Structures are given as C-alpha cells and as structure tokens.
Amino acid sequence: DIQLTQSPSTLSASVGDRVTITCRASQSISSWLAWYQQKPGKAPELLISKASSLESGVPSRFSGSGSGTEFTLTISSLQPDDFATYYCQQYKSYFPTFGQGTKVEIK
Amino acid sequence: QVHLVQSGAEVKKPGASVKVSCRTSGYTFSTYGITWVRQAPGQGLEWMGWITADNANSNYAQTVRGRVTMTTDTSTRTAYMELRGLRSNDTAVYYCARGSGYQTFDYWGQGTLVTVSS
Image 1 (cartoon, rainbow over the protein chains, first blue to last red):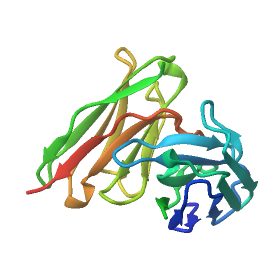
Image 2 (image 1 turned 30 degrees about the vertical axis):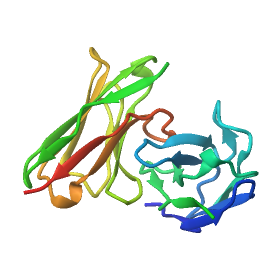
Image 3 (image 1 turned 180 degrees about the horizontal axis):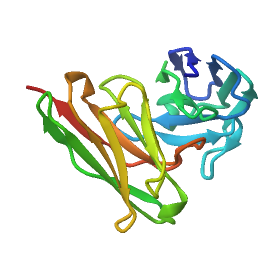
C-alpha cells in the first residue's frame, strides 16, 4: 500500500495566519491526491482534488500544490471556520489510503 | 442535491454481525460506486473498501477482507456494508461516500456509530 505521512500532526495558529500542511507519499502518485476537512462529529468534506483543483464552493483561501511524492495544503488567511482536522488521500492506487491527519487548533 | 443518508447507530456483542445502509439521492446512481470509510474514536480515517453501483466489482482493504461484504440495490439506490465477526476494535463511526476506484469521495453520509461491547 502507498503510505501517506502528514506533518505536522497538530498545528496551533491564530486567525489571519498563513498555514501550510505537508503530505508525503511513499512512492510517486503523480497528482492523484485529495484533501479533506473534518470537523468534530461531522463527515469529512472534499476540499481539493488532483492536488490543486479546488472543489466547487470551497473558499479561495484554500490551495493545494505538489506532484510526485510531496504535496502541500495552504490556507492563506486562517478563519474561525477553518479550525478542523485535515486529511490527505491518494487515489493513484487500487487501494486508496489516507494520511493520519493534521489538527489545526486555535493558538 | 446529492444526499447520502445512513442507518442509525448500532450496539453489537463481540462475534455478531452488523449491516449498515446508505440511501442515496440526487444523482444517477449507476454512474458512481460507493466507498466505505471508518473512524475509530479519536483516530483517523480508514478506507474499508468500495463497490461499483452495479455490484460487478468490489475491492476490500486487507484489514477487513474476509469479514466484510459490500453490496448495492439499484432499485432502491441503497448501498450496504456488512461486517461479521465483530471485535471491540471494530467500534467506530462508519461512513459511506460517493466514489470508488481511482476516484475522490465527493459526498459523504452522516456516519453510523457501531459500538461493539459485551
């Protein structure tokens, strides 16, 4: 299976901060990477597909980049609604996998 | 609007089976498969498997293979996930999501809590 490693596991930030989360794959997945946001008690929501393609309705402060084995999710100016856990997911393989998650907390 | 609505919470004893349903609406059911993902308390997301809408193809994670069966009923636009031989570490919220092989999961059900306890 393709392993995904996210860093950091927890991130403390303030409203207005620029935040970057990294996802590293154990082998090349080209651009077959998605990012999800999950709030407590809720289902995950798809934010970004194909590494950098923003889903409809997702605020433009979210952006994704990368290819191959290294990817980033950036929030340009953190808003109160953005405090949540973020997961990357690869769909290059017949067996999709998720990263372990990055929790974005209020500083 | 696309909706996936799951069945309610379940409490099961070790060794029992559970069957969770996922009723869909708002899209052409035959166009997308259904994926199942679970999340143990305080833990991350674990992909369990997916099934195509026509039941022709399925793919299960090694961690549950042999104990899980995923099916769909095209007449009711409903997907099902049955997990047998329940253990305490199967306690989790189980999610269905739209999408299958080589796809993202763009719409999700609300989740079903399955508690395994003696």
